[in-house]
Length: 211
Ligand code: GAR
Image 1 (cartoon, rainbow, N blue to C red):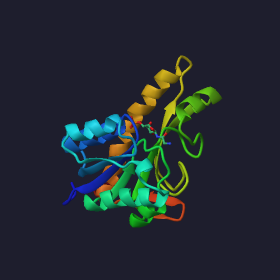
Image 2 (tube, rainbow, N blue to C red):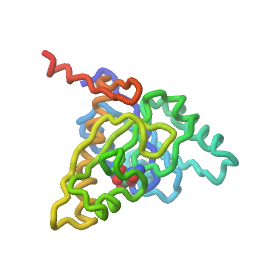
Image 3 (cartoon, rainbow, N blue to C red):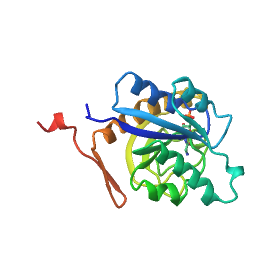
Image 4 (tube, helix red, strand yellow):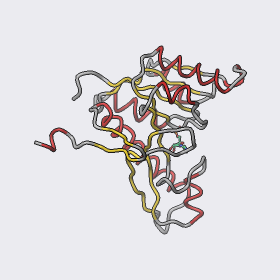
């Protein structure tokens, strides 16, 4: 276990099931993480309620209240700074993140995507992969940059599409994998094992594995 908990700021837009998986893993002390703040661009996001239920500061940043994308992103950055966040985790945050946030947290902003990147970027990737007829899809956690679903890949897990799968059953399988993988990756950050050079992210072996 790490000496100090990693303070994570989670960015959401919707239901927040990944957020919930992180909250639960932190609550159960499975990961050395504290969710310091949850920020949503949508007031009605169910994830904000999940945060409040767990006594985590929940912040709605309203894009329409900001004249520019710059000032909207500054507001997000300020909320992250105010809550002394070490790492920013996008979990179903469906907007681009501006340089104001990315530069404030160099190599400390990550995203989860429900496909094996670089395949099936975008907001409907589970459906797109199913309709394309691939036999293998999965989940990717990657560093974020100024493009959608881009940036160095940290971890991936594959999910097989069975003959009798439907979009709904595939969605359930993918979400189950996401809910395992994201807390695992956060723990790798808490242990200081993730580094990145150019496009390549590396995970150092767990200290116990090197003995
Ligand atoms: C998750 O499946 C996440 O991977 C996806 O949005 C969903 C949010 O669900 N993100 C993307 O598609 C990013 N391109 P949640 O709000 O229940 O965690």
